Structures are given as structure tokens and as C-alpha cells.
Image 1 (cartoon, rainbow, N blue to C red):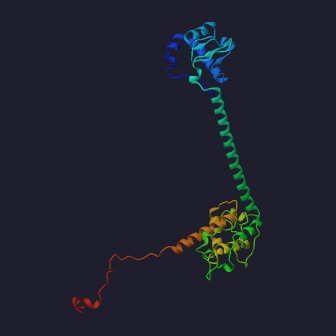
Image 2 (image 1 turned 90 degrees about the vertical axis):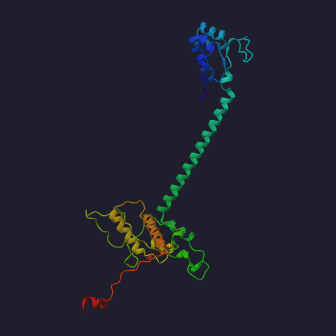
Image 3 (image 1 turned 180 degrees about the vertical axis):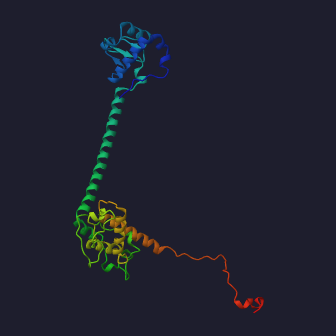
Length: 304
């Protein structure tokens, strides 16, 4: 939207003071009309007569704020027959070409902004759909397992010894495939796996959310833990800790297998940090503990 420009000295300008309030009001209305319709200061005679009286129009012409055809001002163009021109309009206001260029630039900026917002929205929707599909489709676990499988057989990574990738200490640096989310099958591994026992009821007689949702340790989850952390991580113990924590807290999760996977990663990380932490050393600072002398040292003093 263009604006009709008036500087902060307009109210005290000699021409304005001579014209008077009525003529100045007409001048402002004519200036706004010219700016709105991009006439660059040219005015139709019918508009001028509709906005003002003959007296106010003559007043503006006499003080030099408005020009009629045949005027002698060398700075302003001649208006068409029957029209008028606002004195020095383009000295203070933008031309039609400048306003149209500014509008076009603004339109292009808005289009770029809308396109960028549309791309970001599509990317977020795409990521959300991929995450949703990976949680809902249990079959997605097998391809990911093959993609993250070691390049060397027997987990030797090209060396004679076991790769650090397959040990507990190196667990945190290995990308792991996502676990399948519900629905998932309950597998009784050896008859004593975590989640194979009946869920425990809380004091109020109700089951915890994790038990209501039917969380259980499956064969697929065991295989993932073994491939990711190696045999050093006690999966059954960690799963029992996981169940106890969430039963006590009564927490709710959208995907319990994903939450279990994060639990094992944290446990592996903490175990690795504890294993690499330097042992504490006792510092005496020259202190020698007091030692009681043998009883024989006091025999003479005690009269023995």
C-alpha cells in the first residue's frame, strides 16, 4: 500500500499557511487520491470539483500547491485539458513504476516464503509417515538388520580379535535398527524370559499401563540386543529393571519397544562410562595413623 508523503514541516510551510485549513484539507485528499490510483500527481477535473469548492481550488492554485493547464512552473508537467497537477508530487512521492516494482518484489518474497513453508511442511509430514510406518510394520526390522549387519563374518571386523563394535564397551557408537512396535508376538525364550510371567497388580488392584499394553520381551528384541550390545549386557536383568521402573511410576508410552530400546542404550552407555572411569586412589598427605605401643612399654611405669 503506497502512502501520500507529507514532511514534518508541512504544517508551517508558507504556502500552507496562506492556503488555510479548508484548502489544505482538499490538498491532502487530492494527494491521497493520486497516490492510491498511481496517477503520479495528475488529477481529473471532475474529482477535484467533487472533493472541493471552486474557492478552495482557486486558493490552492493561487499559492502554487495545485497547477491548472497552462501553468508556468518549470518543475512540473502540464496536466491534460480540464485536469490538474499536484505541485512537485514526484519530489516527495514514488512513481508508478517504483510502486509496481515494489509490489512485484513483495509478491515474489511471499511466494518464496509460501514455497519454503510448503516444502518444510511436506518434509515434516514425510518424516512423520516414515516414523509411523517403521513403528507399525514389524517387517521393517529385517531389512534394517541386514543394512546394519557387520561387513565381516564372525564379528572379527577383519582382525583376529573380537571387534569393539560387538562388545558392551563399544555399544554406544553403533547404529541400531528400530524395533517393531505393537502389535508384537510374545515369545517364551527358555521359559524364563522377562515379560513371560503374569503382570503384577498395583496396590489399588489395577494393572500398570505397561502391563495393560501387553509389553513383553520377544525373540526379535533379544536378537536386536545381542547384535547391538553383545553378550555382556544382561537383557533379562535390564528388562526386569525396566518393568519395575515403569510399573512403579505408572508411566504411559506410545511405543514400549522403543522405550525399552532407549533404556538398554542408556544402560550400555553408563556401563561403558563406569568401565573407563579411572579408579580412586587413597591419598595420605603424610598422615600416619596412631599405633598403640605394646603393653611391655608400660611395665616399669605400672610397677609390674
